[in-house]
Amino acid sequence: MRRGGLFRGGADRSLPDAVTGHWADRLAPLSARPYLRLARVERPIGWWLLLLPCWWSAALAALAAGAPYPDPWHLVLFLVGAVAMRGAGSTYNDIVDRDLDARVARTRDRPLPSGRVSVKGAFAFVLAQCAVGLAVLLQLNWFAVATGFASVAIVLTYPFMKRVIWLPQVVLGLCFSWGALMGWAAAFGSLSAAPLLLYAAAIAWVVGYDTIYALQDIEDDEIAGIKSSARLFGARVRLAIGLCYATTIALMAGALALVAPGPIAWLGLLAFAAHLAWQVATLDPAGGRRALMLFRSNRDAGLILFAGMVLDALI
Image (tube, rainbow, N blue to C red; front, side, top):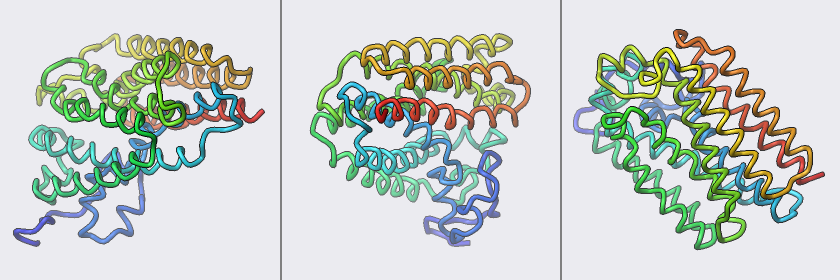
């Protein structure tokens, strides 16, 4: 044990929703593992779900401009930025939620409630990750930079919402869907109706998939007094998720219609819709492991939609 430092004692163990055998739990130095877990490195689904609206927006912009593909440099920047800012957001969220996390079985072994990282160390880590995100953002045009900064207030507010409202997933959607504006802003230096519809579609998608994720914690959330859409919807949770996903598809179709793509983009949207319908049809509200699997499958759903738009632009 190191006293007075950033790393403190406790048994090293992977968290229950981490990817089994991830390199961060096997190969990283023991002193680095708590920080990698704060950044959710061993749970890459988070940065994928933050990245995908960015990539969708870049692909939508390519279709609108008649370009053969999205700007590859923008795609790389969004990838780096998504990893960095997801890590920063998760670390900040853990700082705010450290007392609540200590009362929930799935989260009580996280680095802060378990005492393996100090609050001071976590704040320093947030700043380091934000510096990377800022460096990425400054590679874009000034309108995109301003658009990126406009999300900060929502990001800072989100961790407190589960104490206040029954649908904190809506605020999460406002945060995680911001990339739906960024790809277009980076390409055109402006916004229009198409990326705004895409943003709204992504918000509904986030509410749907994060409600599935929240099913894992529903019993512990009741004990801890944490509000969530899974608790709010109760026995109607499958219907509620289905409505969220139907709204996603309708708004996504509106965004595509405004850029008049070819048939392959529409086929991509159809495949995306089929994937979401499969999630709803096979959901077991009482099955935590099934819920985690379906939640993670949204990476594949999002990549299907992105692939459809990119192939349409190419062809």
